[in-house]
Image 1 (cartoon, rainbow over the protein chains, first blue to last red):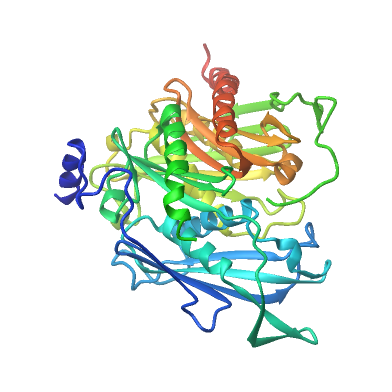
Image 2 (tube, rainbow over the protein chains, first blue to last red):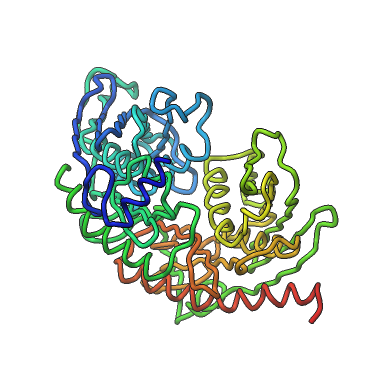
Length: 252
Length: 238
């Protein structure tokens, strides 16, 4: 079986596509690809293809933080992206992806949400970040976070006229204060891998996604996968993610 | 969460509820609280209360869900509408969907699913009262409920949160600390093997602080582990 082949190769220290354990596939990043969106980006990592669109709207703030704009992140596993995806409301995995992407952006304090407040307690900008998977060949978390942040970084706030949005006139840039990058490290038996393909993800023991800010702070983590992790493994994965975050950061 | 408070969360070395930074809240655990379930438990950490029930292993339905070589693990984390300050709307939220997934993955490594082909082991967690660290409280209750149901386990799964407030590393965050913390790290582990089964984080920490918190949780997990074993002994005798 294919999974046995993947595992057997890994045992001898090789990956199916010939990459090193800590090597990314080719990464392509384009921004401003959706004219209708206030910000957008498309990221391809190998055959994985993700589009993120940012839309902005006026809304009410949360009552416990009345002076801050609102960030909402969604993710859809569109059925075009994989034979395993089905249409319907977001399932467990899509929900997890959206929340992990959201946490990386939110907890890094990348968007200066205070500057998105128009009238305290009444009117703020809501920033919608929507992740659309176009083709799934693994590592959706890293690809989606990169696309989401690239889209936000290039997003512009629409013009307001008498409290109404003028959609076709974009004004100033979305205020950005930090730059998060998320790196997922997978563990398969005793090997630590970066940028797993879908067939590698199918045999992985566990993985840890780590969001890292430009100042070296860790902002979010998420362990996934069916097996447990030794404490030393978790530490190694954090260190490897920090090291590899530089490879991704250069795209921003 | 990005929230700001002018209020100090630690005054003269004491937290809002009078605890020291590394002190856990009062913990109460009881096994066998739902007569209809094969196994059940209620766990309280301060004002956070979770109750868990386990059904199975029993034949999985509908049949297409059955796996010929192992049991499937079904799980649900749910917040009772009255468990929080503003009523929570019943039904799955995005948050509870994600927590359901990480809870399942936190418990799965402790089980021998291959010993029960075609069956389902079902774990239902209800948060009755929420005051921070609800997912880890739910995992503690679920671990006990699994043991109470007689499901063989490699080890009990012990869960605890760690974090940082007012520049101080702490354990077992209560609701207010959770809202205003600089970081929050929910963890679950199998203490005997010193292995992690749940690890999440949000906030802002230097990598070394992350590692220290994980080690602190591992150490303090022993106390929670002891409570779990006591709760089981309470029901099943010496």
